[in-house]
Amino acid sequence: MLLVEDDDAIASSLTAGLATAGMSVRRVANGADAVAASIPDVVLLDIGLPDFDGFEVCRRIRQHSQVPIIMLTARSEEIDRVFGLEIGADDYVTKPFGLRELIARIRAVTRRYGATEETHHEHIVIGALSLDILTRRVLLGGVEIELTAKEFDLLAYLASRPGVVHRRIDIMESVWDTNWYGPTKTLDAHVAAVRKKLGDQRWIEAVRAVGFRLEEPE
Ligand code: CA
Image (cartoon, rainbow, N blue to C red):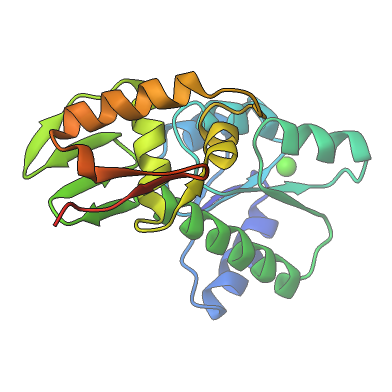
């Protein structure tokens, strides 16, 4: 992990303490070095730094990375904590903090981060059809299919649980972010478009008065 801390005494005791928990620490002592460092698995970030403050470091890291960031703050003011979280920090600990508390926080944010990464890289395979949720690419029999954004969202939603009948209202709410109890012409038009691109009507089965189900045609 990367420790951004200008105080040598704090940095060395933290590094030694975290090492006992099997965590290896690379330390930098200012904001510029922190921003220039290659992205680690976790960032422990002091707020009071000699060049620019921890908030600014956090903001700059967030421009290109979702790495977990824990702010180490000497200030206990609510405003600093709220501000830190608003600009993208995952958690904070207030100095003086215990090593066990810090280790628990580190483990919690990395667990959450790992879980998020997995869903981002989710890959759905249903027979000849495969969807990459992160890159939003769809392959059918190894050939890429071009879908519009909404067509992809619709297909991904149905594919998230293949074989299950999804209610129209649930599809509308999830894909179009709207509660629409009236006629769902938009949905039908998109289903028709996706079917056409998949080259076989039977991929998406209409279940009368209920909704739709995605399944590989036999
Ligand atoms: Ca400091």
